[in-house]
Length: 463
Ligand code: CAO
Image 1 (cartoon, rainbow, N blue to C red):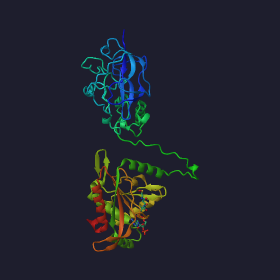
Image 2: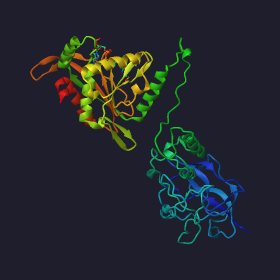
Image 3: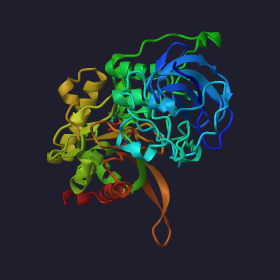
Image 4: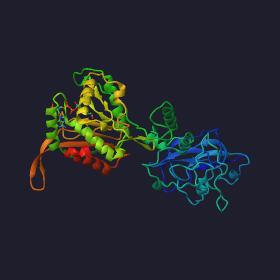
């Protein structure tokens, strides 16, 4: 007649009083050797206690919430007929078992090696090989001790080797389940105790990915944000509801994507535009029909800088940088309905006066909502000028798929040291935001220095 034997908690290093968080079997269950019986969870990692031999569970001696240590009896199992391991297995139930022989411990890694994997050798004597109901069973278990006596598979539970901030909190069974589905556990939010990831969490993650959610299974990043706060503002005072305009909704969605997906850095600089302003005023006097603002000089200066630093006139396309040989400059225009960005095409081929005329026309059309989609497409680089309004600096958001945007604030007279004395100079603040995946800080500083040099001496635009 088959013997009923004890299944005990194996060697788990120096850990004692580890809570049981899952009981994976119940009386009557047929278990294979090394099949998980219970899951333990310390504050740093989880592990399964495996069945030391195949058989039928007669009694489960622990429940969720119990604290267990090495040698604690987990279950009584009636050994299957002909189970070689059972013959050499632990002492029969209710007979105190010999202390489990300690094999050379192997550290439990963050991801438990799966049965039959290349890692098996390294973990020959490590328990918790992590089979699951739907996983292949491990054909052979731990080797008997040299004495040939009974032994429970030992586990070295090396919590120090486990980085709690790096290792997702999940049982070996859940890890294997995630691996089979190609899900990176780092991207799954755990709903269990202490943020532990459950099988259901993995399933939900896959469902969200299949439904086109932001979190793709096994790859990509994706933001895992809290839901937007829902507040009843009327509780605190009078309010009025006003629907967002279509432009604001579209612009808002684009801005949010660009802000979230592009690693932004903003480089600030000053340009001495004293001479440029004197020239602009003269030119304005001669062309009273045109509105000749500093912006047209900025467009020309931007073209000059883009020619000198071609990777600013580019877009990312996967792991390719698409360098553009044309110079279409987007101009952010403030309209009552929100922000739009019409594009001045081939700005390199146009003079200051033509640019002024075109800019006047585009901003008028923008404010009258008469811009066609084609007039807002194909931009290489954008300029957002708040100079007519005020401010000293700001951080514009890159207009994807462009890689940089120039923000311009209001010029102001400032005392500037010329080597001998402070002289009153008209200083124009520049704020260049860029995509740090494409542009390095040093190049951004060179770019704004180039802009400042060109705006400081507009004769350079002829070069
Ligand atoms: N410093 C000082 N004065 C400036 C200046 C600057 N940097 N830029 C413009 N000015 C002056 C102009 O010379 C003009 O003066 P006059 O009336 O005496 O001629 C006045 O400010 C108003 O200029 P403007 O704003 O009408 O014209 P512009 O060519 O500079 O800009 C446009 C045109 C369409 C870009 C602008 O009207 C606009 O919409 N700006 C807002 C852009 C925006 O919202 N950006 C933020 C986007 S969110 O990141």
